[in-house]
Length: 186
Image (cartoon, rainbow, N blue to C red; front, side, top):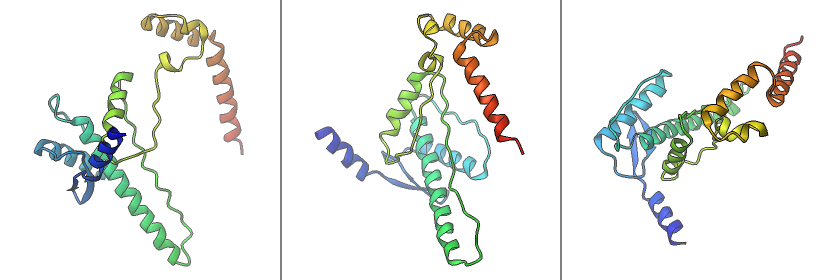
């Protein structure tokens, strides 16, 4: 009970930052290097570009990236919703705006993704998310699941998919090809 209460208090007292005219919630009073990092993330997102950002270990990169990206995303969705409301007042406006600003957070290991989810829980942001795993988490081939060595399992998976001896992969490929053909018929 007390843990939930303390988390609630922490979220209520979360500092709001104004970075590049965007409202960003951050769970702590940020250091200058964190504000600079979030500024670069937001500027990159605003122009639709790519960037490579680095910062020393322990400087809160994950939290900065999450808060900046999710704050920017929320602002974009709010802006589109306001425009949609205005379109209701315009009689000839037929165009609908669909607010889609997906964020893909990619990591090499499952443990790193768990750390990201842990950091996300410190924030006020509650995005809908899906965690996709590797063959180790997703493979339904019982024969391959029995192989304990990940490297060996991955090698066997590649062999089975190339030689089309994995029923699950082959069946999936056939069905997805049929579905694609149906979708593109005139």
